[in-house]
Image (cartoon, rainbow, N blue to C red; front, side, top):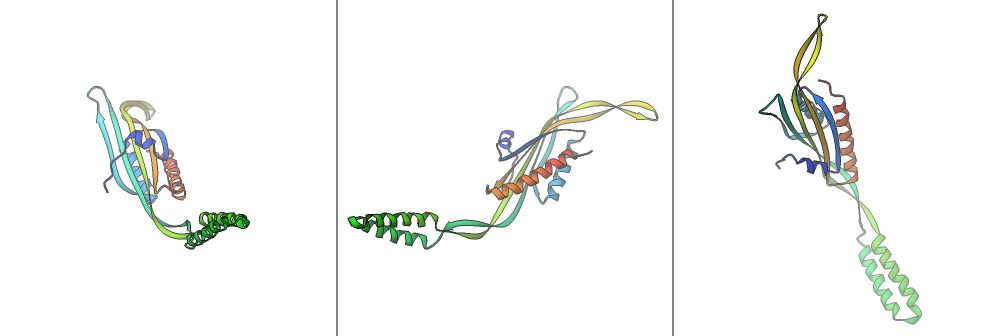
Length: 204
């Protein structure tokens, strides 16, 4: 299965979505850090790019970076299903109830039988354990601008002005669980929260 980065609009429509504004001197280093963090969390990186396009005029450039990561795992869940004998019992009770309705003295019993048939058909269920495969996907899209900035460094009690490339970027982080089950989405939220904490603690 080939993966292509979703558009910003598609990312924002994902069930789980966050954004972070960051400033870095090296967007590639930041995205390597994100890739390593996702790998440590058990994710497989299936797509990653960091594109820096320099403007023809001036010392600025556009940054567009993308990561897609997936985690596959199996889990045993409980599925509610109708008991195999519920349908035949409901049919028998329903038929008996209909016949009783033709007897004026047995109408009440007929209605009770029909109500019982409906209740058994709707409520008589059992839980079945089943092993299912799940997939969680995390998308990261970084959009920003790189420009040449100046900073002052104190060397040997002398202030020396230096230049460096600075990138101001918005990280759009999104995720989805396949299938979209509550317990799987909770696991995804936990991973996304951990990833956000790592972004907030990133130091170059």
